[in-house]
Length: 321
Length: 222
Image (cartoon, rainbow over all chains, first blue to last red; front, side):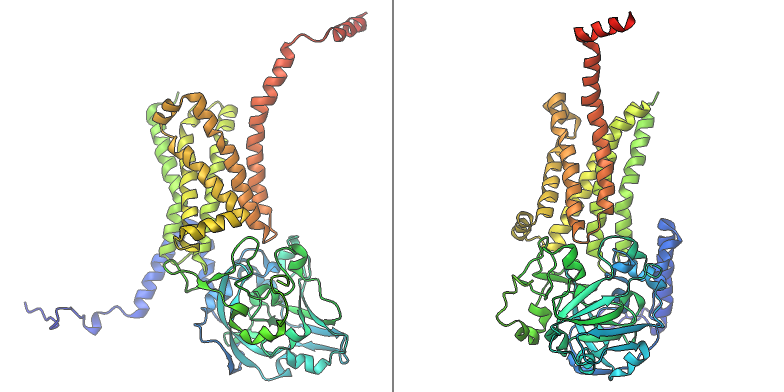
């Protein structure tokens, strides 16, 4: 029998002999289900049911706000995050946030402003042109992601409500409804979750009023229907599922700085030189990339957004952590 | 009466069962089931299992006393060694994934951060116990000395739970460490009761009552 060989001695199979992608993927799925089924039963299969499928949200990419890092997979970004209103484990929000009703939803913008506003989601979506921006997200716990958000600068809101001279800070208040949020039964934090920014931080063009991600409206577990994203600060500063925004005179009492003031300060800028009392902030693990055989990557000052440095001129960032 | 064969079978079954958590991790690793942050999953999981096995080890004596199943003692060494096995995996993930085998950096972390200091101390204290777990070592040390050395496990369990407690402090979520803590506390308290309180009560009962107490009793009888 004649055996055809490639001149350099390597057998290259005929195209027809290569297992089609659909078949090998279904084989893999089959093996996985066997394994999962025999170990832990059907409950674990739920995790496989996660797939993108939310409502599409059109937005124009804004090249001025796109980092070059590889975006995190949709699955990782929507199944691994902190949202204590839905439980303290990072897979809790994806499992339990289905109970959140995101429509109807109104957001009250009030306090030291000349024109207070109460807006529903549809008016928020139309308030300014939606942009897609790819931001790094650095969690205070030492992991990071890269996420394509959809929204517009929070400055657009500030412009419309016209803060008075007394407005020095902005406070963001998350929904606190026990019926929709099972995590509220636990006393881990004071509810509602409150976060805050200095007015100049809130006015910075990077601060994004966010309504979507990955080309879709925000999934519940990621802070639907409206959240804030402040990419140069640790993730917990970016309040989710916001119902009230208040412009205030005094620095707001924020949820984490109430519960552990020595660990979480009001500023909480990403800073590799200021350690958390219980771990170093010098490095981070990029979810989906930094794995078993690579060192963790170096964390960048202000998460790489050096354009915000001027907001903190003359401030001792070790003291104002 | 439990035969040697039955003990051997029980040991084999226990050995296989104790390896299951490890097998699960390996299976999950190869089937992409460790979640978005596999390293965190492995670290937490091996830490949890270290604490479980420490509790199992501490459970043997109380269970033996309550049930009269004295053969249980012959399974204790294996439980203790599995606690050490999972502690070693836990420490290795820390040294490997957090510090990429940079021993100096690792030691800096140990000194600087209290929750790591206590966890590391607990791990280091487990080493002499694992090393002296063989029959030969028991003989060489002598039963009394061996036993006092192995009482270190009480301290190790306490440190392990403190390590977990401080780790969870950041999340302000003490439900799990509190559960571990109360189980371990209960297991230590029954020992305190059996080894200290009960003997003391017994000694008191055996001593003659003080004279004036006797007189009072006589007066009452009149």
